[in-house]
Length: 338
Ligand SMILES: [Zn+2]
Image (tube, rainbow, N blue to C red; front, top):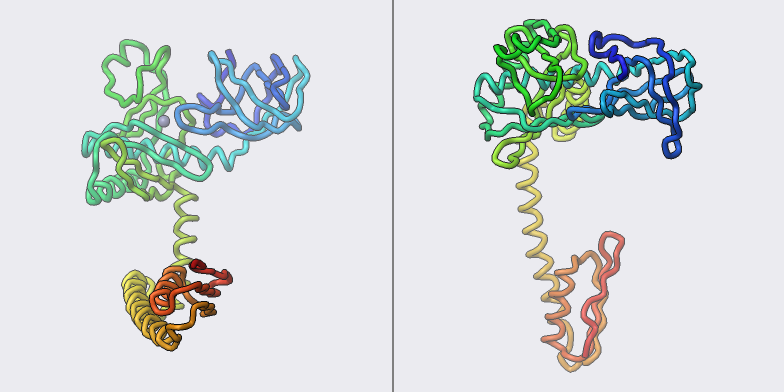
């Protein structure tokens, strides 16, 4: 059983431990240490990354309370090694996971939602609730969650004894065997969880809910917290800035301006189609009905328009006809038949 340093302190960035075993694992190595600050994959969250001396930690898994570090280099058994956590990645995961606890706690308190799914990856975080939620309800959850951030609520993690646990009301995704670790957010939520969390909710930064979709009678919500929310804001801001400059409109009026533009494009397309139809009819009328072989090159036609031209020519002239068109760097050939 590996001693879990991350369990007691999620801010440990460096530690020393003894190598208990090191075995070949496909093209890499599986290393077990006496203790570790590396959080293994579990509960919907990816594992930590970093180094054990000069060996890169590629993945961390837990099996029967033994934590296995997958490394790119072998480490000598019984040696003392220094582990260094990629803390930028770890803190990002802490922000997302702690943010998820606040959102789930608020959704539970306000609307009786149960969190039935959670995925925390490098690019995307999603949480699933068992109940459908309206736009207004989601907006309320987001507002109350951010309020809990602004109030800088304390996070506590502990293993209550059986008696205390019996009297505790806490959220849990499944029945957990063995000791239960409780993550309590002062006045906001209480949930069984084994992952590292922030000390105070202020460290989470902004909580933003995005991309809501209906899923198995409930909803799946995409979540961005802290730096991810800031990056998302910056990316969208740059996009809106570029669109508003191009359309010569205010940034908060770009949606209306784009809708108007789409309407104009649609009207123009309709006009172009009518004009093209008129022009093609004139072309077909210019052909002599006695001409049995017809070949025509007409640039800029879509495949449907080309088909229409070929049909009209066939009706007028019969015989063999081939119609070619070059559009968007492609050449179409339509209806070559007797
Ligand atoms: Zn959790």
